[in-house]
Image (cartoon, rainbow, N blue to C red; front, top):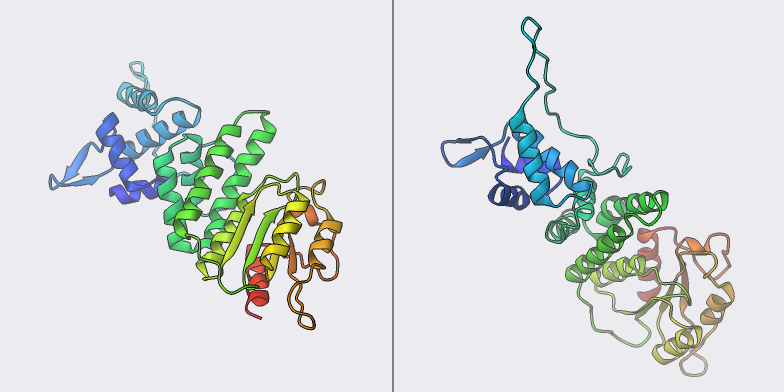
Length: 314
């Protein structure tokens, strides 16, 4: 196998595989034509063992040393007269080797999960950027990033406080990848902007950041206020800026406030006889069961984008 083949099997970047060779001596046993690396099944098995060990919390250098020692030891000696014990052939894994229940997901999810569990910032940034560039922001979020975040969340919920640092680490790097991909666009004409904020007492901002990046990617200006904006500040910001759309995110039913959303939707501005009101989108699972006429509740990122574009371009 080539280095690229091995990287795809492991779900990491080719540069990561090469760095493991340089740092820890985990390179292939043979080269083709003295130039190109060619990896055998045994070479791949050694790297897979290292990944499995780092997923348990071992530092990469220690995991690499153990993987090399185990492979060098070879199979246990057989007694005279006994048939040789068949050794398993290394095969591509169908799971991430991380203990996360990812299910039937894109291959990139497994690489992202491994990098997050190892707290490997460089590899994680590279994999997130590659997924966004290759699949587009909406597909990367829906099919790569969100399934991995959900798997990490399920893991720490089942194990108490373990893996909380992994979720925070992954979320921070996802946020950075989004901002690198879609820098902010200056606000355009009055009334054409989209205002995004979490409701009071709500601090889960990442889904709003994804929507913000997707809108910027489409050339639509936004104003992002982030987590837990107090109600009076939310009302004041709407009155000051006159947005075409206000997206209110609520992760939990305990934070979603239908009266607040209705109050925002009723705010008017402009000259007499031509006054406008914002379109208020109730975003997130916290609004489930609180549907109200005039307060659209898009179920996902693609639907939220369509609703914002329709209102802004009207």
